[in-house]
Structures are given as C-alpha cells and as structure tokens.
Amino acid sequence: MRGARARAPSFLRSGGWCVRLGRLPALVPALVPTPRARTAARAAAPQIRRLNDKVKDIMKEQSYQKEREVAFRRTYESTHARVQWWSLLQTAVLLVAGVWQIQHLKAFFRGKKIV
Image (cartoon, rainbow, N blue to C red; front, side):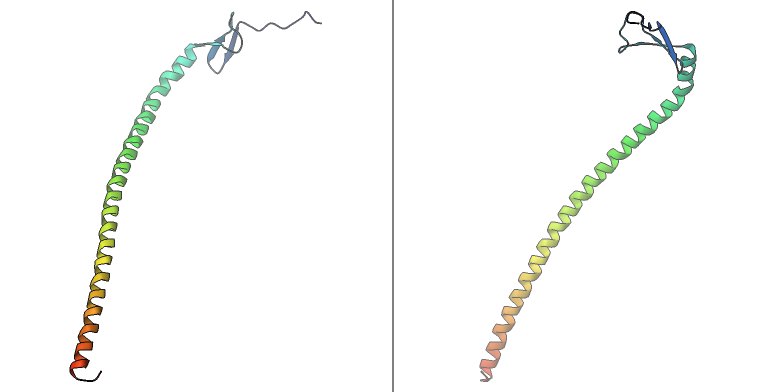
C-alpha cells in the first residue's frame, strides 16, 4: 500500500489551543487561541502579575544584598589592613623595648662591675 498515506487533519486541538496546520509544515504550526484558552489566560493574569511583582521584589532584595556585601567587603578590607599595621607596630615596639632593656641591663651590670 505504497500510495495510501494518512493525511494530517487541518486542525488539531490540545489543551484549549487550536493548531492550524493548513499549508504550513507540521514542524511550524500556527497557534490560534480558543475562547476557553482566552478565559484561562484572563483568569491566570492576576496570579501572573503577583508572581511578576514577587520576582521584582526578589530582584530588588538581591540588589540590596549585593550593595550591602560590597560595603561590608570594603569595611572588612580596611579593618584587615589596620589590624596588619597594628600588629607590625606592636612587633616593632616590642623589639625596640627588648633592645633597650638589654642595653640598660648591660650598662647596669657594668656600672656595678658585675660583668
């Protein structure tokens, strides 16, 4: 039965949408909404708007958190730099104090003629 082929119908209905095949290839169907689909879309519109508003709020919150993160990062880096300098200053003070104490003790013991 080589010549007998099934022909595709010109309209297919699925889930409230009407697909018109006509002369278009089956891979590129033209979608035409049915009244039932329009009603469902109208009923879903407020929920879609609410979801869209929630997404916008989430995006604003993400932007705010990103700005806070940048500010906290700057604070952290400046504090870290200050802590490093403070520890270097403490080390230098301790070294200077140690050298001074050694010199002072040497002079003391020489003065007492112990060394």
